[in-house]
Length: 309
Ligand code: GLN
Image (cartoon, rainbow, N blue to C red; front, side, top):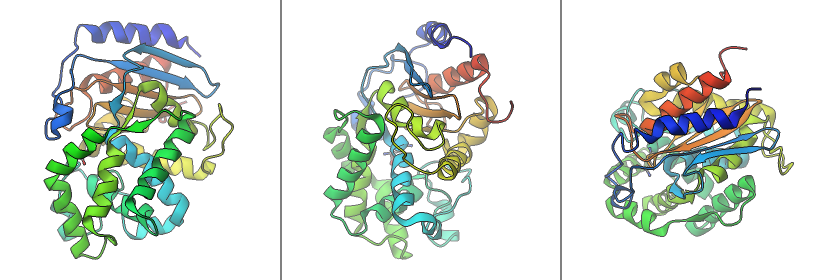
C-alpha cells in the first residue's frame, strides 16, 4: 500500500489555500458560529495505524453521521423489520425534504434522510425513556471509538431544538401516518441530541473502522455486527449517504460515506481503512465542500474504490 502520511499531507497543503470555501450551515444557529477556515483529516487502517493532518483533533458536531450509528443500533435491536418503516432507496431530494413523504404514506425513502433517521431513532426509543436512548447511542459510539471522553454538545442540541421547524414538520407528518410511535417531542429530543454529539476526526475514523473490517473493530477486537450487516450498511451509505449528492459522491470518490451538516464526512474503504474528514464549509447539497474534494484526492492517490480491484 502506498504511504498514507505524505498523501494526506499534500492534500492538507492544497486545502490550506482554499480554507473557507463553501457555506457553513446557518439554519442551526450554534453551527453558524463555527470558523469555516478549518480542515482536518484522519485515516485509520485496518492494521490499526492512524494518520492525521490539519485539525484532526478539533471537536465538531457529527450531525447526520450519527445516523449510521443509530441505524446500526436499530438493526441490532429489531433486525430486518427496520425495513417495514423505512425504505432503502436513494431519495434524489434534499436531506430535509418532505415532498416524497405524502405520496409514500409516511414511509421515508431511506434511513439517512432526516425523516428516515427520525423513524430509526423512534425504533431505538422503544421501551426506553429519551434519556436512556441517547445514553445507549453515546455508549455505543464510545465503545466503537474506544474513547470514553466523547460527549454531547448540549448547546448545539438546544439550538436545533429551538429552530428545528422542518424536523418537527417531518415528525408530525409521519406521526399522522402512524409511522412514529412516540410523542414527537421525545423522538426529536433524542434525534437532536444524537446530531449534537461532538467528535474529532481521529475518534470518528476509529468509530467507523468496524465497517471497513467486516463488522469487527480490529483495534479493540470487538465484533460489532456480522460481515453481511457491515456490507449492507456500507451499501446504504454508498447509495444514500450524501442525499441528492450521493451519485456524484460515488462517481468522484467511489467509497461508501456519510456526511453531516457540521462539515464532517465518514468514509469506509472496505478492507483498507476508515477515513474521517472535517471542514465546515458546505457545498450546495449540504456536504463538506473541501471534505468531499479531499476524499476524492485520497481515493485517487491510494487507488481505493469499491468499483475496481
Ligand atoms: N441535525 C441536522 C438536521 O436534522 C442533521 C442534518 C444533516 O447533517 N444533514 O437538520
